[in-house]
Length: 251
Image (cartoon, rainbow, N blue to C red; front, side, top):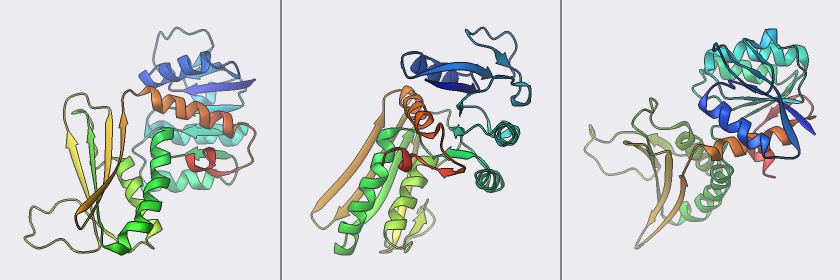
C-alpha cells in the first residue's frame, strides 16, 4: 500500500486526485496540505507543508508555483518523494527543483497525461523520419478562454522533443504577422487558439509535398492529468534522489 499526501487537496485537481486514489486498491490518501479554511476530508489536512506531521510515501502536488519552495524544503527534510504537477515555474524555480532533486526524488513533467507523453516519443520518431525528406513541422494547440500562457507548456515541451531529435537545429516561430517572407526551412511554428471550455488539444502537423501527417492529442477532461499523476506517484515511491519525468514512468 502506497501512502499519498495531496498538496493542494482543496483545489479542483486535488479533489480529482483524491477520487482516483480512492478507486485504486494499491494506494490511499493519508493527509492533505492546503491553506484554505473549512476543508472537510476523511484524512487530516494541514495548512502548510511545515505543519504536516503525517508521513507519506510520496506527495502529489497540484497547487501554485509560489507554494513550491516550502514544499521542497519539507520534502528534503522528511525525505518524501514528490510529483510536481503545478505549472508556471520560473527559470529560477526550475533550477531550484533540479537542486533539490540531488537530495530527494522529484518528478516533474510539462504535462502529466500518459497520452501526451506518448506523443512526445511519437513526434520524435516522425521528425527523424520526415524532416530530412522535406516535411515542415507546425504545432497548433487549443485551450479554454481562461488560460493565461500561450503557447501552452505542453506545446513547447512537444516542440522541444522534436528539436532534440533534430539536434536542436529548428527555430521556434510564434507569430508571422509582422514578417512578409516565405517560411524558412528550419522554422517550427507554434500557434495558440483560446476559446470556450476546451480542456486541451495539440496537433503536430508534418506537411510535405502532396502529403500531410498529423499526430494529435485531445484531452476530454482534466481527470487524465490526475490519472497520470497517480501513476507517477506509484512509480516514484521508494525511488532514490534524482530528477524524474513521465518518460521514466512510461519506460
